[in-house]
Image 1 (spheres, helix red, strand yellow):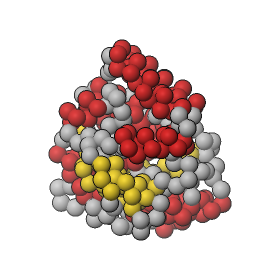
Image 2 (cartoon, rainbow, N blue to C red):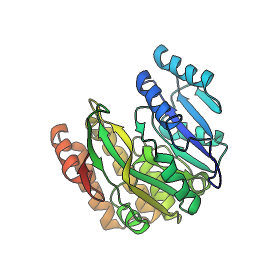
Image 3 (tube, rainbow, N blue to C red):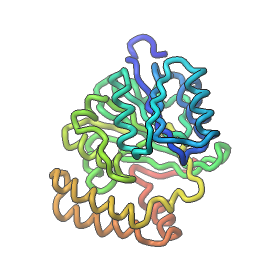
Image 4 (spheres, one colour):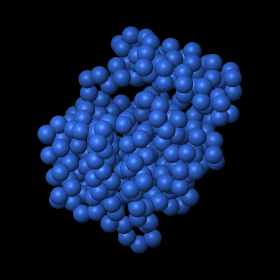
Length: 281
């Protein structure tokens, strides 16, 4: 639990039928018992029915851990609505996000929560891709300062979503998570920044991001292209981007969604992953 002047915080963890039971168990442990600064409560949102193996791990977490709330949604509603439901159940102003297939490094919350306590509204970090924890790969560093984040957000998502720790009131002031398949996080971040939220990113990779089969395939396709066009329309209507920026984004970001997976992988790893500097672990 938090001690001294460090404020209490909640961990928000969504789970759905496509997640792997063993990965969930590892993700949960890394974000709780292995943390130098563990969360004061965990809100696990089960987004619709899941298979027996995953249900067993969810029940295991619920039965053996203290201060855990499991919110079971009757049907799969998608990430944005699942996170909104989970936020409503969080007890604390500071909320940390993580996903069911990633691994938090032990120092993660000890680095991020004090920054939020000092006055930032949202704090993310770099991530390190991995297939096996014994073989960490590419480090993806987002823009670090508030100014760089606000400027860069007009062209790309300024935070790695599974790494963020934020003030719940700042999310609420921006209208909360809203449904936009595969880009709900970017749309939230844009609205938070437009509303005056102050953010930063920690340059060190505080989270290992799992990149199994299909990781780059999910970055493309017509469904994501439709979401990309809708995102650009919304950001333009918000006044967050200019007309020229919106057109540029549809051409560049939209075109990226349509190139073959092998080409997209090379482009991503060569250019798009490098926001504030790129290195290998």
